[in-house]
Length: 128
Image 1 (tube, helix red, strand yellow):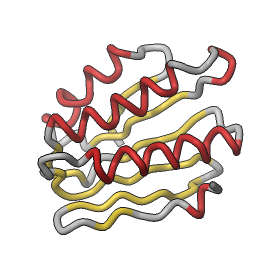
Image 2: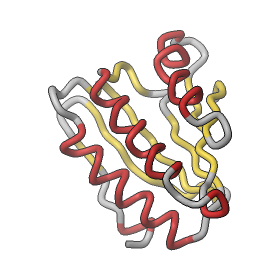
Image 3: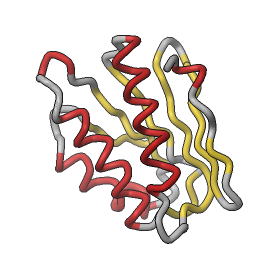
């Protein structure tokens, strides 16, 4: 599946979409992710996104969470699952994941920091 063919997610309280910015694939997660099991919608989205990245041969992606108001632990688990998929690849096929957060929302950095500890060679988190 091509990057531009990945369907956006539009739930009551949150949305997820993909955009290509300066040749870097970007995922934008916005709103409040508080479904009891957001993996039902997030896991297939990130699976499609990962497959599109592999098809493109991109070496870097960006996950923008600066407009994210809240994400429960199950939502973060979906992102961890995505990172683990990248880690399962041979090192030469792995790609970088840069998470951009809002520096005015302290919880974003503290909630996503464990993802960087899980995969410090491929994941970094920085203010937008």
